Image (cartoon, rainbow, N blue to C red; front, side, top):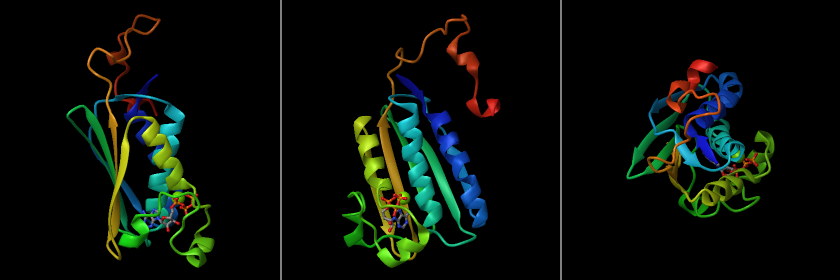
Length: 175
Ligand code: ATP
Ligand code: MG
């Protein structure tokens, strides 16, 4: 099914607002995307929510989390950047494994199961996409998700009520 990626991202960001505010972390969304990809709305929302949730959880108070949207050669790209603790090169190779957590003692305090990123990878791969990671310890991390866009002409057509899909307008206006 066609999924509106704009809507997915704003839902994921909205759900992280509260935990972010509690740590005085600002989430900024910038850039733009062609809206449509092929897949499952709820699974994609959960995947992006996991990434944004990690960015907030593993960052100190008062920092910023950036969500960047762009598109190139028919691939939608979403980057989630934080100014957090970062991930060592050794850990970068393992964090997408199920139950893998960098620091068990610290992770007990922050909660969670170590499943988040394995689910993210699973969901994005199922959508024909890929997740990559850049990180430097003490500086922060950037997770990049790439998903193929629907080709032109594959966008959702006229809804039942006859209004062209384009008239739906930016989804953020509906919130
Ligand atoms: P949960 O199942 O609740 O997501 P989790 O956050 O520990 O638990 P993952 O999301 O899979 O599990 O992340 C695995 C580990 O990778 C984390 O425990 C953390 O050590 C590290 N990690 C993930 N994202 C970041 C990030 N943005 N910055 C620093 N470390 C991170
Ligand atoms: Mg997590």
